[in-house]
Image 1 (tube, rainbow, N blue to C red):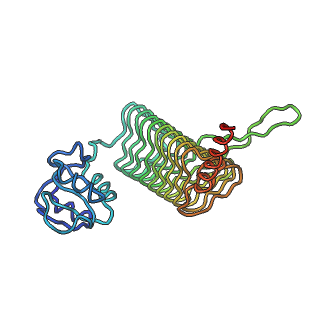
Image 2: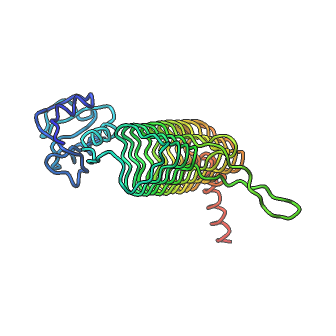
Length: 334
């Protein structure tokens, strides 16, 4: 979709420097930009590269100044964020006709709102409710009593177990499983055998959550597993039963959260982080890649990076590494 730079300025609330009549149709990197593309710069060095690219217009910060350049400038406080918003705005939505594919199986008691799309071989069990303009991807299975809000995107081969609730604008990528049984067993000390602890709770996912491909989120054992508004979860992440994840949390790939852990608002979790049961990660903490958090540990420190196993503030961890390196060097020289 072609838009004038003036229209982009109005959408972003930017300050325009230069010709607003030029047209852009999409975004691009500096290396691949062509005429009609919009690019961004986060500093003066990046601005020079952007101005020498083939792009039509540049999103930049106040460092760019107000003088006319070789391309129109759109000045904002956060260029990368504005670029992301412009990309979504310029992207033409995929053409998708609403309705139910003839190969889908939809129980008569389920309720599909206006504009819902049900693709090939989807199975919808009894008493499911799906909100306006939601799309259910091919091969997905939606269990009994599931509720899905409006404007959600469920990609192919997603399985949503009975009783799970998704609110509005939730995105679930291919192969993910929501609401499966948690890993809970009771050992019979007489026989040594394990018997399953009840897994009869719920899973609730709030507005604007996105979950990557092939992830799993277990429902609560007796109560609820909850993921709050705006949280983003990468591919191949496991969330155990009774876990509570706050708002605007980011969790990178191959991380695992054990049962009854609590992750408060604004936490950042790097790749391959392991969190044991009954852990609490307080607001704003940052867990570096491959960190390990032992059972019942509390991590606190807004903006503090924790690293290692067991995880501790990165300054402490690096000091320990330096001491170990000196000891190893001393021992090897003796």
